[in-house]
Each structure stands twice: as C-alpha cells, then as structure tokens.
Image (cartoon, rainbow, N blue to C red; front, top):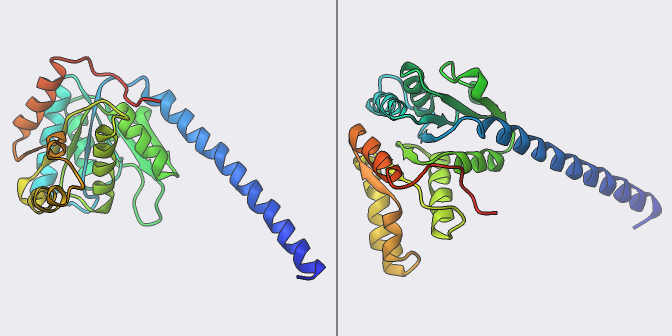
Length: 233
C-alpha cells in the first residue's frame, strides 16, 4: 500500500467514525423524545398487523371494533401509525374518544402517520429498534392481527423478552385463528418436538376470533395487576 492509499484509508476511517458517533446522538434523541411523550399517556394496548389490509377487509373492521372496546375500558391504543391494521386501531380509539398513539417509521414506500392518530401522541422514528423498545416498554398488551414480516418481528421480539424475563408477562393475543393456525401448529409440532422451545412457551400467547374475548383477556389480566411501563434494565 502506497502513501496515497494509506492517506485515503485514514481519512475515510475518521469520516466513518464521525458518522457512527453522530448516529449515536440521533439514536439517543429518538429515545429521549419517545420516553418523554409516551411516559405521559398512561396504560395502552398495542394493536398491530399488516399495513396492506384494506378498509373493506374483515380484519380491518375487527381491529376498529377491538380498539373501540379497549378504549372504553380505559386503555389507550398504540399502533405503528401507518395504514392497514394500524390505521384501523387508531380509528377505533379515535371513535371512542380515547388516546390514539402512533409510532411511525420513516420508509420510502409508505405514507406518513395516518389521520386518526392524535397529533399530541405522534412520533416518527428513523430506527426500527428504537421504535420496538417504545412498543414493548409502554404497551401493556398486544393484539396481533394478520400481518407480514414486520408483524412477526414485533410478535417474536415480545415473546422472546417475556421468555427471557427481560420484561414481565403481558397479554399477547393472536387475533384470527385461521391465519395463525399454521404458525401455531409449527411451534407445537416442530419447535417443541425439536426441543427449541419448551412446552410452556406456547402459554405466553392466546388465540381468539372474538373482539369481546380479546378485551376480556386484557381486563382479566389487569384486574390482578396494575398496568405500568415495562422493561428490566
């Protein structure tokens, strides 16, 4: 390597380091904004699922209904702030005159925060991992509607944190037995058989097709425990 190449490498090394340090401050800024806003909202339930679900879809309508019923029980609703199931959750909370929270993510192919999010409880993140911390820390339960990779990511993140006792157990409800049946069968018949999860790990979530049952699961859980922010640091 000649002197010119060494100088180029040295300059680029410093430039990359500076970018990394600046990224740390941007991450810290997102955490501070998230904690500051979400600490004030009180108990909330997260409703998430596919951003591709249209308003005429059965699960969109059921998500609206679920959010309305949850809100009338005194909980706010947190979603990812986007379209589809997220929009449905915020719409239901808004219609019931409850807290409608949107934790958006900056993506090149999605619309911004949906119109049903309360502007006072709207945050847009650049980093998925910061956004996921906010969901887990400030949501006292999850109602998971049919969704794709992002939905599965959030679901398994939550299950892993409960399994490893990084957070306390909270209600996790998979809504739509027809959609989740294959995944649950695989957990029971493959993961348990191979010993990659224990028999009791499937007790970390419940499955329902009923909005009333989803709300009852949450209310029954918190009839014995005060809802509060989660995460053991």
